[in-house]
Amino acid sequence: MSEAETRPTQEQLDLYAEHFTQSQTMRLLGARLSFPQGEKVVITLPEVRPEHRGGLGTSAINGGVIAALFDYAIGCTAALKDPTRRAATMQLSMSFERPVLGDVARAEATIDSVGTSTLFASARMYDAQGQVCARCQGVVKLSRMKWASGHSPAIS
Image (cartoon, rainbow, N blue to C red):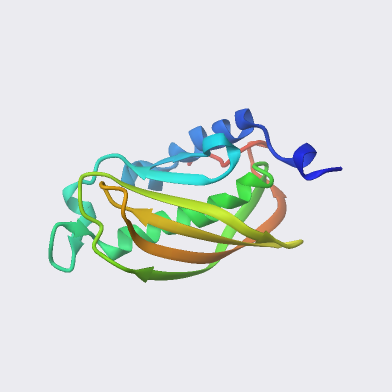
């Protein structure tokens, strides 16, 4: 079977994103997940709220919020291989290059390589002006277990 035959469809990825965006933590953050053209993960924070701010004692997005967005972006790269299987972030390594300022933010992640049970991914955090403000590399554990719903993350 070729790579093209085993890739999930955009419909599968859109369903995954719809369900994942409805999870409690994503709703708490006000974040949204998408898979543009089925090639990457995008986590968008369409409205930076006061509780997201506080980095460097300024109006920048707090590093803990950035770390959470990176965790989701890196973790969800597994869906680009198989959105029906469970996965979990095992390791994150982040570098903060400049404050994430503005009223919106976006994390984008792509797969670097995939093994039998692990996946390596990279992500970037962009501010409202589209400047890269932080970078992340991560390792994701690919489970053999399917999601409880059978096709995407369960909504808690």
